[in-house]
Image (cartoon, rainbow, N blue to C red; front, side, top):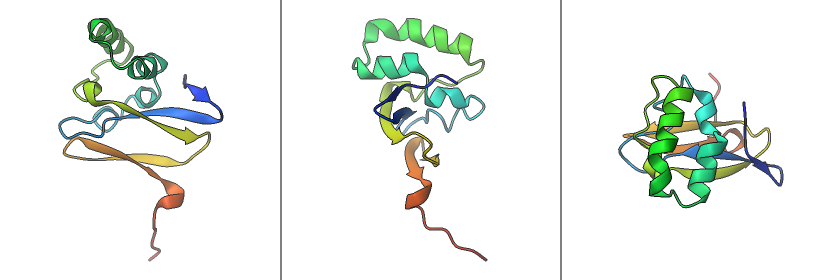
Length: 106
């Protein structure tokens, strides 16, 4: 799986606005969390003239993907090997890191 790694951190894509999730609506395609072309597009401030081409590429790369959360994408930089999950409520995604979560044992 291709990932963008800089200074020991991995770029993780998520959609923190209500409406549609990015990864949580595409869990069958975990590579969408890290896709280098999408990371580049977000870092370039989401140029509209590249959007149609990028969407076509993603639809070919990830069959039956849903791209509704794409316009709201942001990047969270996590240290390499960080255990995390992406949660979603009504399309609003957030990244939860294992070390920051409180777990209970029955």
